[in-house]
Image (cartoon, rainbow, N blue to C red):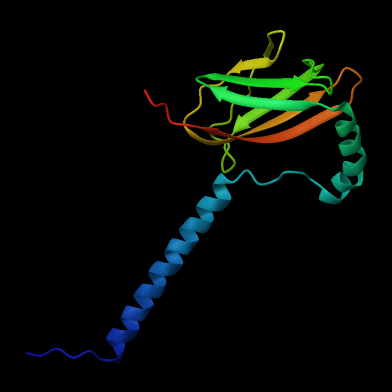
Amino acid sequence: MKRTLNGWHVLAIFGGCFGIIIAVNLTLAFQAVSTFPGLVTKNSYVASQKFEAERDAQDALGWTLATEISGDTLTVAITDTAGRPVRPAEVKATLGRATHVAEDIIPDFEWNGIALTATAPVAPGYWTLWLEMKAEDGTPFRRRIPLTVEKDAS
C-alpha cells in the first residue's frame, strides 16, 4: 500500500520543526540569563557624572601595570612615571571569567618588595582581573585586565 503525504502530515512536520526551534531558543535564553552576572553598575547616568574626574585623577598617578599568571602565581607589578615600584595603600581584586562567576577567585595579594603576588590556581583560557586600588593619597585606581592562561605544555 502506497502512503501519501497530505496536508495534515505537512502541518505536523512544520509544527514539530518550529516546536524544536522554539524549545532550543527558550533553553538557550534561560541558560544565558541564569549564568550571566549582569549588573555592572546600578545607575550608569550617575556613574558617568564622576567618570571624567576619576579618570583624570587616576591618570595623574602615572601608574603602569604589568600583569601575568605564571603557573599558579598571579603577579601585578605597578610602576610610577620614574619606573619605581609602587605599593598601593589598598588592593581589592577579583579574577574570573567574563561569562560567569562560578570560577571567580579573590586573590590574597602579598607585597614582595617589587610587585603584588597571589596564588591563583586557574584553568587554561580567558580570564579577567578586576582591580580596585587606592594610592597613598586616597586616589582610586581601577583597571579591568584581560588575561590568557595557556595550557601547560608539560
